[in-house]
Length: 451
Image 1 (cartoon, rainbow, N blue to C red):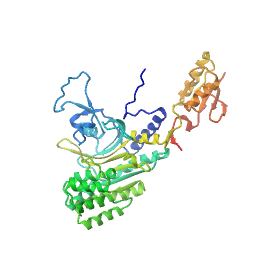
Image 2: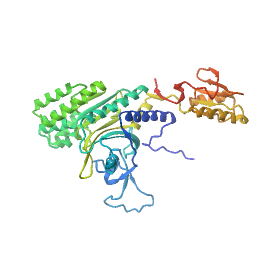
Image 3: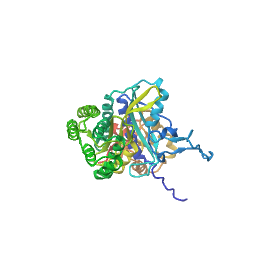
Image 4: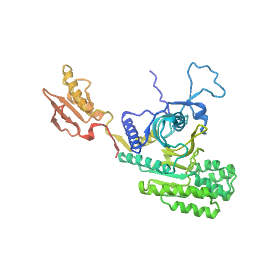
């Protein structure tokens, strides 16, 4: 039989990596729920025209059609469906369809697979799991939610640090700061300036400066001022003073700039108390998508910055609208597959074992298998994951079977009860399946630091 070639960009974890992924997912879910977010799940497909309405390029969207469908597709794409490439477009549609039954502000989290036609590379997949957390308002959405969202994510990622996730930095900016500054300089194509600034980490300041002049019509002085703004960063409100000083030098102060600085300052002050050192103002964070209108966020793993952002998002005042009502939102999205691929490949986090089984019940002879099955059933009834040896081999081989899978205990049935052996230490004690319990740390496989 010919060897099956794997499909690139579609991650499939081995059992121990899947345990790590499940721990990440469970931690995110529990943390989001602790902060009052309700879980939802939406369909995998959306109308193609909706998927293409947020500025994404059509080459990234997988179109859904039947194998036997007619070859002639509608020229206007009407009726065509595509697999969702993020969870924001589905959220907008979900809010509009259910607005009359939702309580606003609506706090939701969503953990699902998404599909994106990107070129597979380190940390980038064509199918991947994404976890989103958003707050959606009806008509208006108070600014304090823009403060809350990065602190929720800081809490979630901080909990993952307990099992070996490296420290994270949540980099924050405010579109109002950038737009107010650019307009004060006399630059009118704000979106194009933001798109060029967003390239700083990829191509460097000199190349971005040239693009600002070529693509945005900036003078050399205006380009230098934009780059000077982007160079400002810090974890305290000194950042706000630095921006005001720069604006004074260039005569670029505006009311919009001051509004943005007040909001950014409030976020930095709150983060200094609740997540010191985690949230950092970084004025080069632009986020290329043009629907962000306020705070923007990006998150990097300290020591793994080359991976790029593992979690990003921001404020969008026009998430959804039905013509009469507008639903603004603020949210963050974490690429779970991107994160898991790095922490597993880099050996940062491991599973304590690759199977859920805590106890392997040995089989003395095949005629006695029913007795072993009864022991396993008694353990399972008490919430202890147990399996029965696949065959009645010598006990040494049955112990080897357990050891290869990381199963910590082997149970040897006896006339009345039996005995259980910790195969790591060699300790063996008499035990009754109706009362014996493994240590709490051995009950289920866990994600733990690899070193």
